[in-house]
Image (cartoon, rainbow, N blue to C red; front, side, top):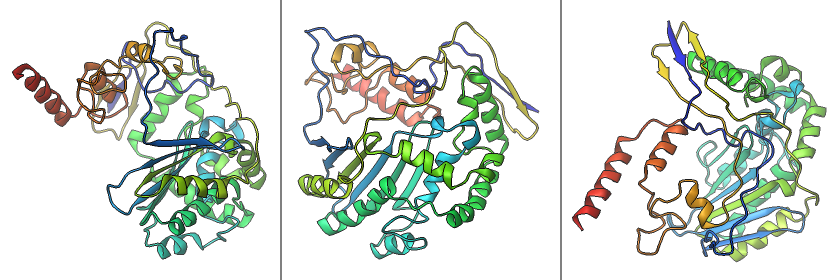
Length: 365
């Protein structure tokens, strides 16, 4: 029998977005420079509150990617609707105003797309994101992609028969994930912040609520959280940004205006002192030791000085001097490498070699 030991000590786990309210950054001094924005970005906000960001990029040639980011996920569920945000994501492919049930996949195939490769979606604690990769950047191609994305954002059908049809697929997906590793992770989340809803809002949900949620539950969640002011459309590719902005206005401009909804209170508190979590499972084949510290979320760093104080001193960052590497070169700092590890990814030997090589090169110069 193997064990997972998680002393809550000093390393930072990527859970800083768990608290519902965003703490404001300290006010910038008059001498602080604003963090520069890439001048190639075309950004705007429609009258109904929907934000968009467009970046022309000609590599790969003739390709355009679209993302619809909705700022809501499983944290905005209730005890009786656990798993609904992820379930709703599935319903985006089961009928909308312009795409009746069964027509979405043939539509994508008519554009030369492969379902799952060029079109996908995912749900997290605080976001739901829909992705679409188009084979061309013409206005016709972009309009077709935006028509589907705007249907997802504003016009899902949520037919009772389709909800019931998808239910078994959701349950099977949950069962397929029921590994020893998943069971351990679920227990850690439950005990990491027991005063909060963190451990009771895993995106996949629980079987009783997946079986019981109905059309009214979907409608309530959809109308509350899928509003233009809670969404951002992102487009990157080989296309004309002005044309894309016009298509976004055409397809999303009819959405209802309104204030951005306030997220539900998650109740996570910052770590105080040290404690340990030990989780075991008879099917585990290895053991792990991790360290984590929960912190309240920080507001966005809009000036360079706060950004540097948070560990953004690495060369190549948005506030680096012009004498350093290009902004596309990742920073080689201890904080950058540690940040990679605390996000749940294993330490990268390749990344360490790259950084060591750069340091040797600087010494040689």
